[in-house]
Image 1 (spheres, rainbow, N blue to C red):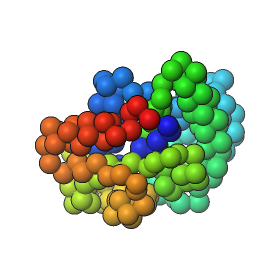
Image 2: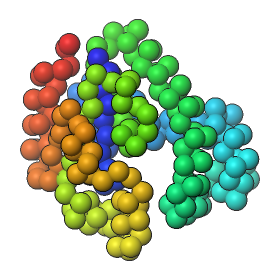
Image 3: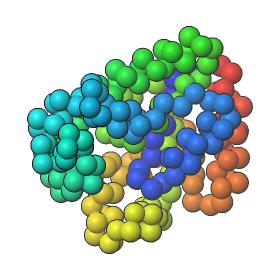
Length: 195
């Protein structure tokens, strides 16, 4: 079974991914793949460098520079997504095939922009990691040392967490303790890990 895992920035999706990995679940991280495809020799490197040369230094992408460009300009963000998404998807699907060949019955795709893109049809279930937007804003400001305006701009660059919650097949509520979150994941795994 292939499952899409998503949330919004600073809702706790990485915490869920890490816990699933500890439990021996195959997890494919879109952020990691996104980094790989823009490394020299990666599938999207040439196209991204041609489109955003100001975000590169000495042949390597400088992610904070790229972030400054795309978080302020929705057209440039869309352009970047169009350049990168096909390469990311291809590499993730190849990884899933490899996990399944090696005997994994559950493969989780950790994709921040799953519901913003055209990913949903690839999965039997979509799981959203949720916390209220006010909590999300505070976490993001603390985690990334951002002003409220900067953090809010990043949150607004994605589909709202309330909307994501409505689109989910399953929701992990990350507005309490870690133990509570882990218990929700364990209960979910009992249902789906051996299907």
